[in-house]
Amino acid sequence: MALVHKLLNGSYILRKGLKPSVAACPFLSTRSADYCSSSLQKPVATPGKASTQRTAAGGLQEDQREVSFDKAIKDEIKEHFRRLKDEIVNHWIGPEGRPLQEIILEQARVVWQFRGKEDLDKWIVTSDKTIGGKSEVFLKMGKNNQSALLYGTLSSAAPQDGENSQSGYCAMISRIPRGAFERKKSYDWSQFNTLYLRVRGDGRPWMVNIREDTDIIQKTNQMYSYFMFTRGGPYWQEVKIPFSKFFFSNQGRIRDAQFQLLLDKISSIGFTLADKVDGPFFLEIDFIGVFADPAHTEEFAYENSPVLNPRLFK
Image 1 (spheres, rainbow, N blue to C red):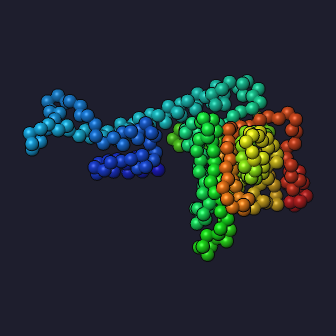
Image 2: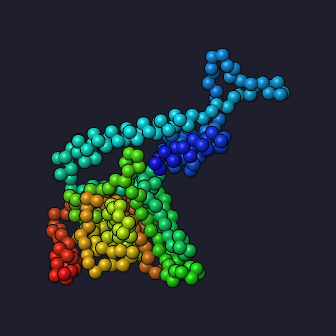
Image 3: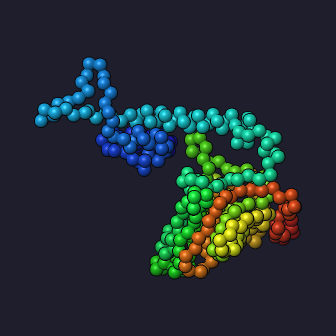
């Protein structure tokens, strides 16, 4: 129903004579949005009809051809069906269209890397400005387009709204992957046991947050977190964080009962800075991946778990 509403709304705008933009057509891809953004096109000659009209000054003026919004809709639907077909075919071949034996023998995988603007589009940046704070955060490509640079200014000054007494955070969050017809997808990292990053920072501690794929309203504020300490200086560092170390939290509070992260249902990952140190900051990221470390055998690091210590939860 949401898809039908968007298409009818866009068709209504077009027939009213307005010039639609990409913002007016959120469902359409960039390719289909070209139909919406170009309102003047060269006319196509039709048998029995003149392709030009005479102006009052006696000159010739080109006709304005009506934009084919129906064609844009058909092309977009065809594109989504093509993507759905690829997903079905890839499912029979193996995960992500790769042979199953190749996936089983895989020891490391790069999930996100930054080599162009299209890689930045997979991320969202946010700060306490959403609640009236003064922190600022920006994301751009690094030197030689070989990394992403997250930078800005952190301010712990609380907003003067009478509702929030604390402030001071900046964050970078990956977008949830989408399949055909905008279906939510998730990452399967069940064969790996370690998060693997290559970063360069200014010495500040960051919180790494992982969210599970869920449609339950009560779990929208739940995440798994762990700390990442940057060294500072001009040198890159490789950070390896075992998934067994990530602790469970809800609405920013660490819960008494800890649960193990479900690695086959990962929806997004994020980085949050909230160390209460006002001033500029930066974090440069080369890639983010996962790694199967044979030396790490720990399954879960916390004893207050219903599985490891059931008597605490009777």
